[in-house]
Amino acid sequence: MWKFADDCTISEVIPPFKQSSLQQAVDYIDAWSQENRLQLKPTKCKEVRSSFKRNPPSFPLVELNDFQLERVSVAKILGVSIRDDFKWNDHIGIVTVKAAKRLAIRSLLEYSCQLFHRSLPNYLSNELESIQRRAMRIILPDLKYADALKDAGISTLFDRRDQLSSHLLEDIVNKPDHKLSGLLPPQAHHHNDLRSERRFNVPVSQQCLLEEALTFSTEHADACSGIVEEARSKYKSSSSNKELMRKMNKRAKFVEVDSD
Image (tube, rainbow, N blue to C red; front, top):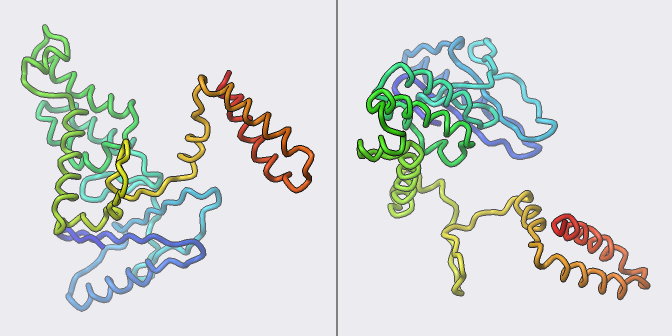
């Protein structure tokens, strides 16, 4: 639960085959508000649901004072537009429209940028950058964008967001009492010298594993194909190795795809 001034936001992560407890949380807040003589407005309360499953689970709508809360795909939380698919098109669209009407733009375009910078696709990043490009054309019309930035002594919005995000992460990592330190995964402890050491134990998704399996380099493709063929002929006569042969055939397809 997050509270800011007269706003309150509740979130929950529902494990598979479990039920939502959001209604109980809303009932508790409603009871607390009545005891403290505060009035809640159900018409201003919204519900956002997010699920990446092909068949999302179904839950009853949350009610407040016998009023079903409106379910929306986008909601604004402390000035940031959060979408149910966690894409940033709506938020970037809103801030670029506002920034296009003024020259003092950085405070607006960089607000909460640590939240979305690392997940911005290039076209949204370029959309943000276009606002500063326009401002620099007004201020220094005779210079190209890169030269205007150098002359003004400022950096691109992308570099600024990257720097702000890195500074925030360093603060969280180096300060155990930081409010966001509990969101970090456990730190990794390496007993051997590795070429690239991870600072945290980050779980690897199935997509990453598949991408790694498909990244055979072309210079090793022929060698891999030869190994597969040799093993294939070796185990072909044994009926107890059908499952192994099936896996090897799948891996051989990966090699053939990349070798083209």
